[in-house]
Image (cartoon, rainbow, N blue to C red; front, side, top):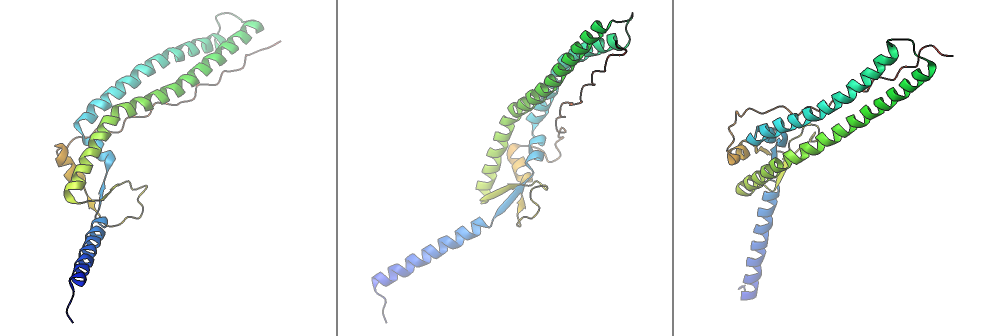
Amino acid sequence: MQLTKRHTYLLILFAVIAAMYSVRATAQDKTGYIDLQLLLRSMPEAKQAYASLQQYEKSLNSQGQLLLDDYTKKLRALNKPVQPLSDSVKLSLMQEIAAAQERMEHYQEEVTEKVSQKEQELTAPLVEKAQQAIQAVANEQGYTTVLNNVREVLLVKPAGDDLLPAVRRKLGIAATAVTPKAAPKPASKAAPTAPKAKGGR
């Protein structure tokens, strides 16, 4: 039985569609992984960002030290007075100590928030540059899915390739690049509790 032109066209069309689905299925199975945190720390710009963040946090802590000194001074005046204190003076000092403690606690919260915002500000350009490099490598090598290789998140994962070496080469980073440690979090020690006035009526 001879095939008509219409039959021939349909067979070719079905063959092309089948090939397209086959290629698409193969591409979807190509998954890559990358440790984004390690990549960011190995970027040359990370060293300057880390130093800037440390300097910023240091300046905030120096302002906090002034609050701590004021608190300590008032605490010493209550616990080790130069001369006996009247109940009214003790009560006044306790109120000042409580207010100073509250200022310290508020400032600690403010420091934590400011450092977090500064860190995001400094790392945003690095993240964008890293994502562009990852996208470029994925396009060049035919990856349609690239996952951040975080052990705490990816407990079970499909087979895939580590793209870190390729992305590092794309960014011109040596494999043995020295990476700074993660920026330390601001201290959040609780301020000492204001003591009760000794003695009384």
